[in-house]
Length: 158
Image (cartoon, rainbow, N blue to C red; front, side):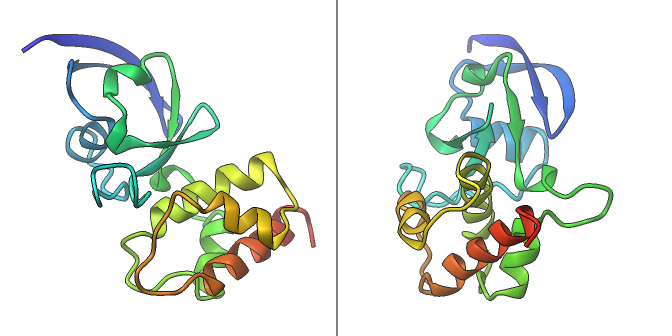
């Protein structure tokens, strides 16, 4: 089995690690780094439960190899909160009913965070379009959309 040494920053921590050539980013995060907030869902890139932010963009970690993250900055759900304070997106999902069972929630939160970083005041249509790569079987999407709208307000000082 071929291995590669990669340099990555995960949730603000720089590291040099050796990974197998075929190691999925989702497996690297969950199994090697114990960052279990990144969920394995469909493992085909359809559900979005494995979504993380790589260099500011949402990436489905079940479709990416760990070696592709060499030199990149990765943020997982565990890296959003700072100094014990939830990120406004996390807080809004909790307060606005954007979660139920919670399995898909990390992926939605990571997608919403990246979306709000690029589009600070999205319309409802833009939010729904931005969530296109994430699936939830529990909530319907009203609470999720309202959570993102609330987070946008918090992030914009409203």
